Each structure stands twice: as C-alpha cells, then as structure tokens.
Figure 1: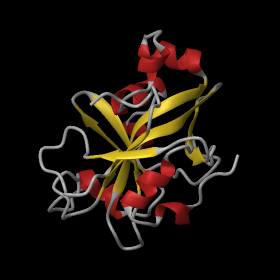
Figure 2: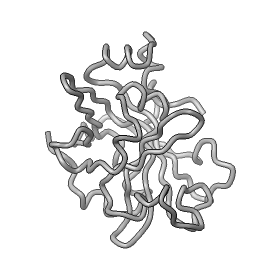
Figure 3: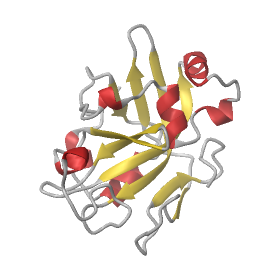
Figure 4: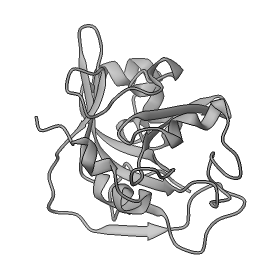
Length: 192
C-alpha cells in the first residue's frame, strides 16, 4: 500500500478534493481493517469561504484547518461526525470533506456499526461513512500520511471513472465555483 505523502495535501482544496477520488481510505481497528474507495468529496477554503468552518475567524474548534496539511479535521453536524482532511498550500487554510465511500474491506463490520444490511446505504454519506468506520472526535488531528496511523489514505485505481462536479450540498452560502466532486454513475455517491 502506497500512502499518499503530505505533499499531496499541500495544494488547494479543490485540487486535492478532485484527486482524492478513487483513492482508498483505510481504518485500522484493534483486530480488523476497514477500507473504502473515495467516491465523493467537497472542497472548503479558509476565511473567505462562507461555507467553511474557518470562515471569518480562527478559533480552537477550527484550528486543525490552519495546521499542517494531511491531518484529519473531525467535527459534529446534526449528530453525525464528519471526516475532513486538511488540505492547503503551506501557510494556507482549507480542508476536504470525505462525503462517500464505496466499501471494499470489512463490510460485515461496517454493517454492524451502522446496523444496516443495504450495501449501497452503508457509506453513501458523510455521517454514514464515519459510523461505518468507527470514526469519532478521538481521531481529530490524526496524520493520514502515516501508514502506522489508525486512519490513512492510499493510492487506488486511477482508471475507469468519470469525475463530475456540482455545488456543495447543504450549504446556505456557496462560492460560485462547483466544489463537490463525485464519480459519475457510482451507486455509493450520496443523494443530495
């Protein structure tokens, strides 16, 4: 497994969000490996992005977005933990929300975590995938560039898919550019 290096994340959030598609998110549990292909992401910039958690101010809550790229930023929305990976050029601010995965490994464990049997509903949304992979606030600021970490991202299959874009889901104020990226026709992409 080739773990994505920190330099991969030291680019603008839109580039990282697009290029994370097809990569594989790996979650190590005590006795199990869970993994899934990333099929949907959203890019968030810093203080000038009205949908960003870093909009207009720096505070302890959003501090990970200002720190080194390649670490997790996990927070709760509507009772669900959301997994972001910090992504920005050095000295910048930003993150990429992982919105959906195509389950690859440890599917039965994921089903138990979610208490669902429908494979296509298992990880087809940001809150669904964190429940399926047992991702909580305790994993905030984890280095995803370290293969020894409990959460990391590796290279995946780079072929056989078309990338589509749209505006981000569920945001009240959005930037003019489309910052949601997803794989066309993939059944694990979330339903807006």
